[in-house]
Every structure is written in structure tokens, then in C-alpha cells.
Image (tube, rainbow over all chains, first blue to last red; front, side, top):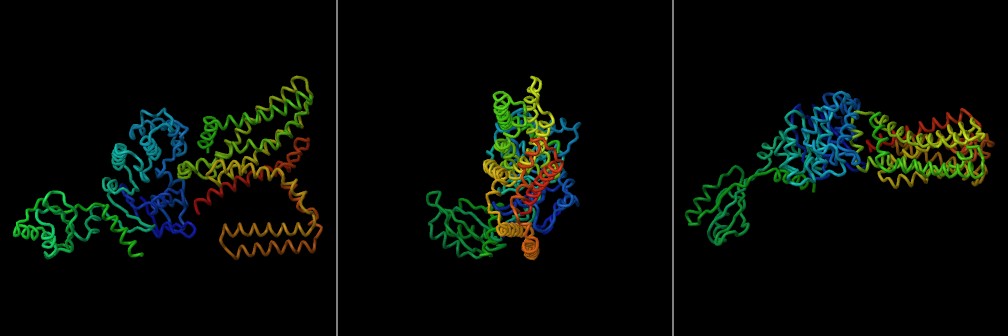
Length: 316
Length: 288
């Protein structure tokens, strides 16, 4: 569906994108992840033809956005970071204008607007001025705008940014619905969002792709050391010293004391080492009751920080 | 193009801007009509068309300042330029909408000479009709310049004030030229500076030092050679050039009753050139 080949974008001397390439198959839902200023929006703006790349090319269904802009753009629905709304229009007027802009035939216009406003649930505000709508509604009008013309590919740039928690869930549900019959690219710096809907994650930092995999695989491969959280009843130093000396343990530290007479210890083990039994045996020998033992869950946040952090450390 | 045109036209009337512009035009024409037509009892309406030429330049930025600045500020240009519509069509849609409003105001003022004529005044119809055609072309040019300036900044106020500044400069251009020294050497100096500016702009656009060098050397060389072999060319050169490309002097032909077709060609090609530049400015932004 989309082929991005060796994109380079320079702003003067600043290198915003450095040789970015990836392909996206039909029907895939891809998350674009990265800190602010990593080049997510720039990439999306180039795919949609708003910006031109300094080098490289983008093919949408085999059509170059540069050489064949009208046809390529017709296949893309784009919600930029700031929804491009004319605030002095009503929702109806706005969507009707977008229909004209995207060359929707007159006969299908009314039907299409009705269907889309139902789908994104803005039916009740169709006659209101966009200026007076809440942020969540504005965002959904933005999504409605992207859906007009039935594009196969939807590109949503940070669709939930600046919304309240309830609106975030609503927009996420909407995105999930859309993912059933669209190819989707979503950018975000919130990882849970990407984790929830995406088949594949592309992590981008400082204009380069630093990782690309399914959310699950990323979780498996990226985190090399296992972490355990323990709560053990016993004196602080004895527990810590004893655990630190067990084989397979890289590092142990006391985090805090939550319960009277017990300590919370975080343990990092060497790769592939399962130390849970050893810890149990040590504790039972010394009569330190284990009140809690769990492996820390690895989330994308860790992976993300790890990957982007490592690169930066290497650079430095 | 139609979608953008209709949207622009509607936005002139859903915001106060369109009304303010029309009111400004009508008040302006009304004042001079009152002065010449009613108080001085002069049925020659071309006096009015002459009198408003400068003041109208304060009204036109009202139409043009928001054309692209507002879109860029609100990021709605992302919708326009990612939609399957060619950029020149978007620019033309916007330009024609502004022009429609200008024309509409102009058509309303036509009631004044018509009323004069109906009330028995001897209105010189050909002269006034020519004046209107000239005034329309004059407006086309300045509207295009205002649009060009609007495409260069995302601040509407900056666009408006810069437009007024540039309009004034163009308006006073021939006056300024007559104030400058008329010696041949001074004219040569100005030409050389102009060649250097053009060379610099070329360098900015293509970033090729050789092309820039060739243009600069050839330009300055030609100017200097002409200075020595055809020195008479430099007599009054600046004034002649300023007069030739003055939008104002050419307009005076129209309302004084001279209908020179070359003036029409000049105005139309000037407008086309500025609209073309606007398209280039917008294209260029995608690349930078």
C-alpha cells in the first residue's frame, strides 16, 4: 500500500529525516512512535504530499506522490496534528466543502456526510459552528474530514493529544473501528495507545528509524535483563546482603519500606536466569517470610526509553 | 477550483471583512461623488475614478491579507494542499474570490454615474467606461500583489501592513524616480545594484555559484558596455523605466479617455506574472 524509500528531509542545515524507509501492507495498522521532534509529523507530511522530501520517494499503491499527486492524494485521508478546521463554518458546511475538495460526486455527498457523521458520532452537532465545539468534537470532525472520499489509507497524527480521558477512550474506540476496514498509520508519543491498536510499531528518533516490530516482539527482544519486585519481612541489611550474593543476580536495591518490618527490594537478574526458587530457598532458610514476589511487567515505555536512550548514549 | 472559490467567497460574508471592504469602497466613492458630482455639479465621473486611486490601496489589503496567512496560521493549508487539487487551482480560486468582491463593489458604484446620467447630467460615457475598465485592471494587479504578500507570511497584520507599504511604494514609484539624480553614472550604478540583487535571488533559488556568477558578470558587463557605446540610453533611464512599469501612470490613460490596448496587455500580464509568483512561493515552501 505504501512504500517509503530513503526519505531525507533537510531544513537548512538541520537534518529532520535521515534515510527513512519502510513499507506498509494493505490492511495493516502501524504505529509511529517517537519523542516530540523526532520526525513523525515530517514523515506524515511528506507521505501526504504537504511537504516535499529532499531525497527519496513515497509510493502510494505504486503511485508517486510527487509525480502523480492528484491520484495518490485521493487514496489518503489525513488528520494533521492540529485538525485543519475552518472555525467559522458549521460542521455540515465544512464537511460539504471537504467533499467538494476531494471531488466526491454531488449525488453521493449527502449520503456520505450522513454516514460519516454517524460513524464518528458527531451527528448531534452537525448544525453548530465548529468554533463552539469542544476539543473532543473538533478532533472527531477532523477524523470525519479524513474519512471523506473513502480513502483506503488513513494517516492520523497524534489523534488523542490534548483530549480528556473520556474523549481519549472514545477516539481510541473509533480508531479501533476504523482499523477494521482501513490501512492506518497512527503517530503518537503515548505508548499505550499504539500498543492497544497497532499490528506493528515503528520507533523513530532524531529522524531515524531505531526499531520496527510488533509490540509483543519489541517487548521480548528489547529488554535484556529481567526485573523482580520483592517484599520480604526481615532486617534491611541482612535481606539485601543475602539476596545480592545469590548466584544469577546482577543487582539488588531497596526501594522503600511500605510495611512495618518488611523491605521492598528490586532485583535485576542476569539474562535467562530464573532466580525465584533460589530467593525462596534463601528466605525460608533464614526465616524471612516472602510477602510478595512478582516479575516487573515490561511495557513499551521501557523499551522506548531504552532504545532511544541507548542511541543517544552511543552518540554521546 | 470551484470549491475553494465558493468557500472563500462565503467566508468574506460570514466574517465582517467582506462587508467592511465593500463599505470602505462605497464610502470612498460616495465622498468623491458627493464632492465632484453634487457639490461641484460636475457630471464627468472620471474625476471620481481618478481621485480614489490612492485611497483604494488602503482597502485592498482587507481582501488580501487573510488569503494565505490565515490558512497557514490555522494550519488549514494542510487540508488544501493534501487534497487532490492542483496548487494553481487553489490559488486561482482564492484570487478570483477576492476579485469577485472587488468587482461587486465596483459594480455597485456604477449606480452613481448612471444616476448622474439619468438625472440629466452629460456624463462622458466612453471616458467613464474606459475609466472603469482601467480601474478594474488596476485593482486586479494590486489584489494579486496583496495575495503574493499574504502567501509569504502567516501573520495577517504583517501581510496587511506590508501590502500597504508595497502599494504606496508602487504608487509613488514614478514620483520617487523623478527626485533621483538623472545623471548617466547614477543610472548605471542603480542598474548594477539591480543586477546584483537579481543574481543574489538566483543564488538563493538555485544555490549554484556558477550560474549566479555568469548572470552577474554578463548583466554588469552588458550594462557597462552599453554605458560606453550607447550612452544616450542612460539619459533619464530611471524615470523612463519607472514610468513604463508604473501601474498608476498607465491607469491615468484610461480615465483621461485614452484606450490604449497595450495598457490592457501590460496589466493582464503583470497580474498573471504575480499570480504565477504566488504559486511559486507556495510550491517553494514545500521544498524548504
